[in-house]
Length: 142
Image (tube, rainbow, N blue to C red; front, side):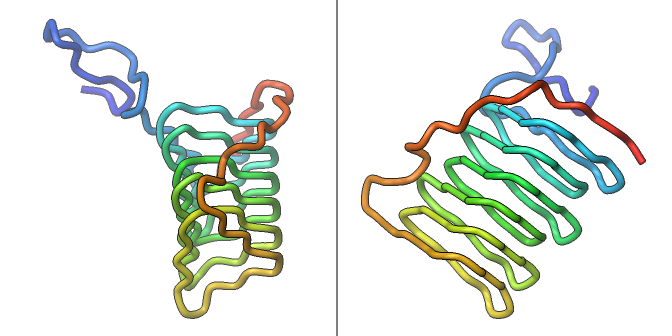
């Protein structure tokens, strides 16, 4: 079975959709433009634009995001230059470098994690601000 397919109830496979879908921006790949997803977005490469995910955004150690992140849960291990809005939780790993504000209900900051910005924690807040949609993403493999 291919990585981007899931089994349907009738036993046939089709394109992955919904909450279980995983989108990976691999190392060496650059996405220019905004990303909208209902599933999980994992960034090991570079994104030049906003990321909106209904479920989760993961930025790996080598991942770089130049844009805002809006999601239910964000786990940051790489570099983010932009605002992070996590409706439920934001985790800043020890390898993370964040240049921008964080707005969430719950935050975890590991030793060594860097944040240059303000952190707002408000009950019932997070992922409430809509981000403007831009042009469709352009994928450039390098």
